[in-house]
Image (cartoon, rainbow, N blue to C red; front, side, top):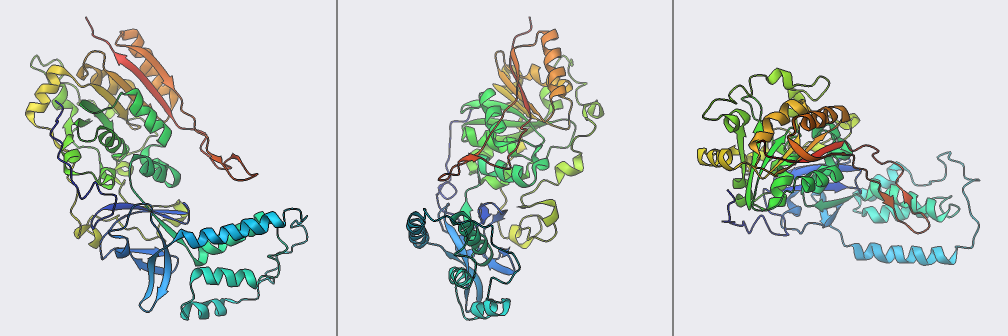
Length: 451
């Protein structure tokens, strides 16, 4: 039932931001991640400064901004990296010249007496309109121990001061990878601990592609539905199904900035409507909702709390500026909401009952895998691939065992993705010190026809 009438929205497919679009603001190289919707009234709090997001409207994704102080207060100004590149070149040249010097930090004493500039001096410089880079250079010039440090320590000192007095804001495009990485880094429980490599493997094993009809069970806030729809590009249909009478939240889908063509391809239908047949053999599905709930998983209150907001550590909640937490906020009232996930028409449901879905993708940490899969597999066409994600191994192992006993699928395998990120720097290339050692499990296979 693929829809080939792809009507592109030129405004939302642009490389430039526009008023009402969602963006991911990366502050100081990942120290703070904020999802925001651009409007003249939207503001972002960086340190003690409230900066308007209006200068970000009409800029290209990937632009870098810095907080500057003007006559009307602090504001976000476009940052040109060429000047910083010249400074780095000078530092590199000086580093090569002094490479043979044997310096270390053993004789340095951290007694807070090395810096001659006081807080009052820095405040006076700010009132005079001194830029953040100039404050950083002044701190370096007035430090009694900076020249005695190693090159590596000098670089760390400079970066630390730049993050405090000249913070950078990177304007990133929100798509499946950036959204998944942001949530997994700061608040993984909201997406069921679904890592980005696991998400990509999940889509590949389910053979998600254009001109497909994909059945999705998404209990991770809409991340899986948005990733499937993004991969299909509006050519085909995504049916997000749910158990019971209440659809699962899909708030993260709004962050993707989908155009009208992709939004129309995202539909919703309950499992009861998809499983009901003329002979009444599947009308009992959905009446055992309580048996599907797994103890210890995410409850409905936690799932419904997934929204487009600032991603921060638990210690920062309540102290940071959450831009899109309340749907009645001024920012959201000024922006047109994205309408995705409309109820599937009867003709679509009838077509899916007769022909089946082309693939199945499941990410439901709240539900028992086998109880759910045995109701979903009859909805697929013959030889349709499926991929099921779960944070723990045992539910998938039980599901795989039951599928083998029932001879319902072939090519069954459980995969455990593993990702290692490396820091690549001159003479300092090694795996990152803090990395995720666990990415969940994926059960994949191919449905066979039951004779």
